[in-house]
Amino acid sequence: MKEKVQSFGRFLSGMVMPNIGAFIAWGLMAALFIDTGWLPNKLLNTIVGPFLSYALPLLIAYTGGKMVGGPRGAVMGAIATMGVIQSNPDTTMLMGAMVMGPLAGWIIKRFDNAVDGKIKPGFEMLVNNFSVGIIGMLLAIAGYYIFGPVMAGLLAVLQAGADVLVKHSLLPLVSIFVEPAKVLFLNNAINHGIFTPLGAEEVKAAGKSIFYMIETNPGPGTGVLLAYWLFSKDKATKDSAPGALIVHLLGGIHEISFPYILMNPMLLLATIGGSFAAMMYNTLFNLGLNGPASPGSIIAFVGMAPKGSTFAVLLSAVIAAAVSFAIAAPIIRLTGAKGSLDEAKDQMSDMKASAKGLAQEGAAVDLRTLDQIVFACDAGMGSSAMGAAVMQRKLEEAGFGNIQVTHSSVSEIPDGAKFIICHKDLAERAVKSAPQARLVTITNFMNAPEYDEVVAEIIQSRKNLPDDNQAAAAENPSNQTEATDNAQADYADYKGGVLIKKNIRLNRSPQTKEAIIRDIGKVFYDGGYTTEKYTEAMLEKEKVFNTAIGNNLAIPHGIEGMTGEILNSGLVIFSYPDGVDWGDGQSVKLVIGIASVGDEHVDKLAKIAAACNTEEAVNKILAMDVDDVYDLFK
Image (cartoon, rainbow, N blue to C red):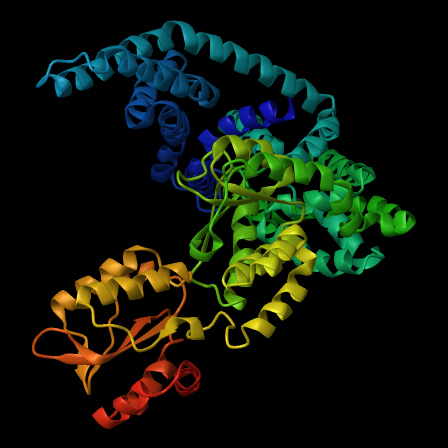
């Protein structure tokens, strides 16, 4: 049930989130140019009304239509929503756009499926254009006479209910429902699916709206994180809280506080209390914002304050944080080690194992060639971006900067994604969105132990561990250190670096140039240094530049346009004592394949130049064994 609610909420917020920049632009224009704004301007003020009445609903409808019906659905959504808007020009039809956009996208999608393969050749463009025009016109008419009046009535009911709450000072009670819903990752759905449309209507009438201050106030979460920082008895939690506090308060990513609250559900009393107190204050002093504060950073929250209300709005966040802290502090102190991140992780281990089990079916991933990890969250803009940055930094510190960590919505994971990281509460949705992918779930965005486990697993996969060590490490990630130590005993020369002994292959029988390059490419690919395409990159290089550089030496490498096929820097050394034809009259006896990322290969190239500076020096190398060649170039 929770997953269905999240999905529906994600769908609603998905229409608004991509257009938040437009909402902010409208809010800033209202704050600056309306009659009571910071810089009143009658001419520029004429933009504010049409922006709200037409631009924002049409953008939402366009996005909603595209989500369902692709580009044609997007156009249909905008056409149909014009009828809804014009049916009642005095009402801001954001909610009408949220209905009409997806509906129009669904209808044109059904039409396209119905006529697929039935259109005579040469008439495709005619049918495509006129179908959108005719069906769009009919939906616009339906929007004018049916959907518009219905949505206007619904909005009027909601607005009347909201007015009752405001007039009777009952709006703070909304905090009882909002704060628990937020930690279930419904924060974007609540803010952008409900409060944004209500707030827009209120801004149109009063120039500001208290609805923009309910979910976006960073104060409640700030108080909880501050209490963890000062009073947590668990070192890991205490140490991680300051970083989480900065991300939450300044970055506006409220999801960072959710795991800390979920560790001890009693802390919901703190966030509810903080939000309730702030809303009482906001109601008492008739506060509001000019537009949505997104993300919920203290900077955005205060930045959307109307002229003359900046300090009062700031005080709202301070009050929320103070009350939340006052309630959270004794709860954290009294519960002691119960607030440990490790214990919270243990309590959820069964759920995590279940989620991973679902994702593992048909999801074996070759980590040797992994080049992308997708970090998914509800909206794809907040916690996932922050988690992706943390994961990217850890990979770079481990020498895997070539593995790109991207972020996306859990409902829109890119096709072909092979490795997904997401919060455990989003696991079911991630499996549905990318059933082919390996899934790792976390409970803490800032210092999840799973980040280090993933890095360790990637290192393990590229160390060519013997089978017994591979099995031990796979059974229990805690065996990683022992497995690595054992591996280094057997392969003391291999540290995941540029050159390993197994890639030095001497005294080979003569082959063609192309066959040699393909063999080198296979060694690179099998060792996790490159993708399969790098072989073609080396062959393409030979077409424009012969890599035989004299002294019986060739250094095949890829063309510049395909350096993205390189995963890790590496060298492959083949020797041919009888010589091979490298073209253009060049005979080669020593072939050193190069795959380079960044500057890792520079010292190796310097050693190659020094060691092969004469034909006699190359001949000496041909007489060496593997250990000597390794010692020369390592």
